Length: 263
Image 1 (cartoon, one colour):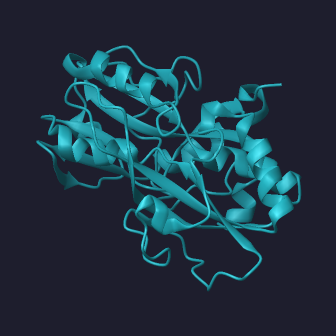
Image 2: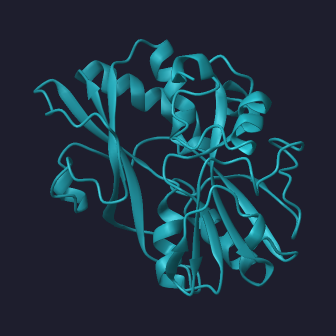
């Protein structure tokens, strides 16, 4: 099925398709107008510490829903959904090492696991398009901007790069995204990538987008915080178990983007 067709799907229709194993690709451009979220799952023993980490680092890790231990159903954003099966792809970390990249996590599920849903910037791309802002999503990178540490959780912020066509459009993109702190909000950086530790925008270390054609003189580099940040944190925290989404393979919620925007 073409991605343009999936843009017309309701979230529950798309999640059912994912649950049946019929879609394992990225979720950009799917279910027009609905919020997408990143995912981080930790044992209850570490949940408060991780929650405090997210609270102190709201741009890369904006919490928009949270489950009770052992409950795989997000109560606020999609109570009929199942976190264990409804994302196209996951990453499983044990003791700081990536051990699996499954399409469901039923074999890893435990009664003590707490799921954090973190807003994703895919969500505000619909608003950028509605404003006729031309942009290209290039990739996700490890920056040299450090998170505010909390206990065992510390490390660099992951950032998402979009090239915005034209200065006026870049300003408008900042205005639009600033209304949506629940899905990363305003950018963390604009301009020179080397200033935040990125030497080559065409070799993203965390997630590559297919469009890597050369930057044109009128394209402005704009960097937003990214929900892949917990995956970087997982490597350093070395929890016995931490589960996240696979970059670009998000959870599609039942909430419309505008319902999370600041008016």
